[in-house]
Image 1 (tube, rainbow, N blue to C red):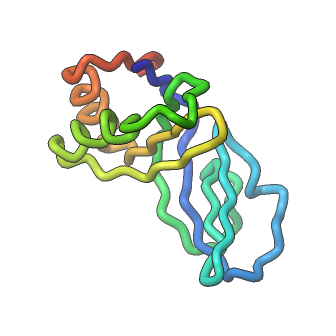
Image 2: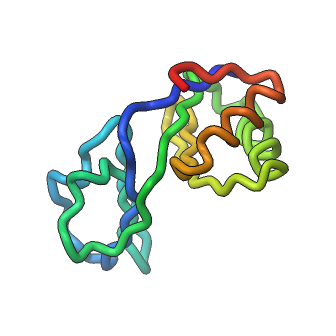
Length: 125
């Protein structure tokens, strides 16, 4: 499988479940907004997050080249198993066409090494 390292540093933000959607939430090479009964979770460009928002920052995104058919199984497992073996924490996002695996910037080199050792191609790293 081929992954592309997307530009920029991302943040994973946690807001109240009834928080309003705002423009900053959609910024960056990848963004994702997910609302559940207990939270509004936002992945977006770190630079645009306002002061006071609870966040975990320093993430880099590796996007699997898609589209990936819905009936294909085990896609994330093939990526996440080598990362787990290398003790690299992840945050995953799935979209209609693909999967995005985020790793901490400090662990990016270890992640790329582990993925390449499994035979995956990582572009832009």
